[in-house]
Image (cartoon, rainbow, N blue to C red; front, top):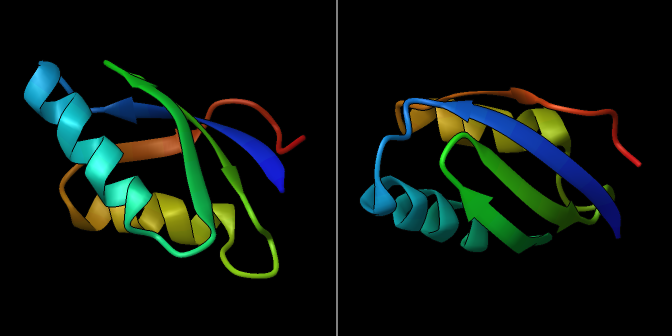
Length: 72
């Protein structure tokens, strides 16, 4: 499992935090560590899902996401 931090725009409240948590939790190969307004930290299995696929999923839900730091 590799660690990933995402910067996420479009979050403004606890409802957004819960929504992002649910979206990420439902992705196969992703383990959510923490979601707060503007950021999500998670673990992922690169054999199962890529950071780009995670970002794309969030963008499909109306959020603007980008890799905050390099994949560790």
